[in-house]
Length: 205
Image (cartoon, rainbow, N blue to C red; front, side):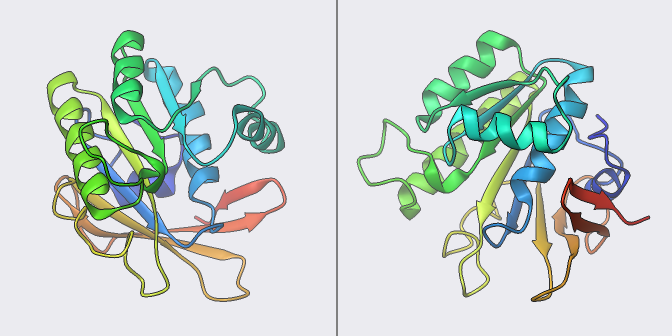
């Protein structure tokens, strides 16, 4: 499935594979949500897309979409942190793609610990992986990277997903590099380059 971004498609190995789980990590504010929102709008052409936000309100996501010029996009939004409810909504919608922003805010009803705890991260990711494999829905997980450069502290999630992408930039630079560090469907160490502008991310071909 094309994400509407040549750079992102190349890093993924040609596009998004149905039933795959992709983790996109990066520092807070680097542009992960912007990239995912644009992908949601483009992917909606291939079938229903559900964008689950645990970070922002629906109004905040809609404002960002307008700023990016995505007024005509018809992806569905849900503000929810319960992973079972998100999977239920994606199933009811028959979603081709599910975007979870971010995995750190999610919680499973099976685990009592707080969102962001290792046990919650592991359980929520496991449930989303099971859903992707049984339904054929492509799942994209956004993960924040800590100061130590790890996704949510320990790298417990990297072994569970099919593809791991890192969004990086040098301090003060408007350029962003998207790098694949693990990919079951394409070459690892492939990179995509973007420039951060007022209107959002622009691909650097």
